[in-house]
Length: 273
Image (tube, rainbow, N blue to C red; front, side, top):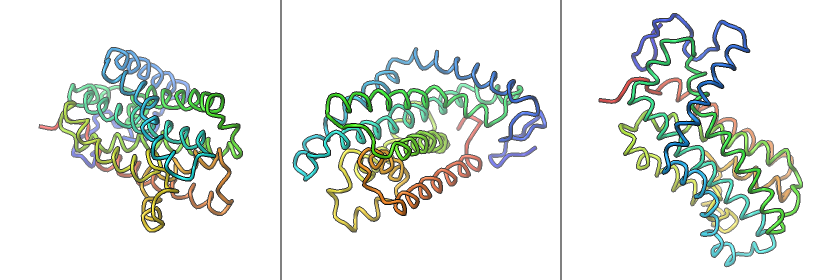
């Protein structure tokens, strides 16, 4: 079977479908791959520091802007949103860009495709440690902000859960897509910067969208991670109406579908020469 990137699957399996075996065998394969990825991640000290410490430290840089704005009453919710947004960008997105590129250039992805693993299992198993790390950080940050910054309990927790799930899923898909235009692991941090900077400034992470001019905020609302960040914050503040929440969820799902389609179309399994 031919794939869009020109590679050929010699096993005759569907590229992005689940294996023809039982679901339990598929889950075992994904868990085995995820365990191997977790070990490799633990050996990369730079990736560990970036993924663990940056999302915890960077929200402090947003505090001066928050203090200058009319948001002091929502300090806990704003700081929590910033911290979780950084988890999307650093614990999941940037770490996965490097992981996908490294596995591709070392021919790991190519070798995995000759076995029983499907393409979806390979991509999912590689992403699972980063996704779990992002979710674990979000839980720790939520408890910490609730206790230390008096953020209180979420008024609409289902919105926060939706925001977390769509945020980590979309971050993983965007990482796979960014890896397609990244030649080496050394350049991974460079190719990831545009999305990181745009999301930090326009998606309500460093600078809450409440502080942006209305026309700018309206445009930034359609950035890839903006819906997920907005849902996370709205889950704590309850600031969205049912209609607004529905539209935000639809926008987040639309971005996820577009990103997954793009990955299926342009993800590269062969090293870039």
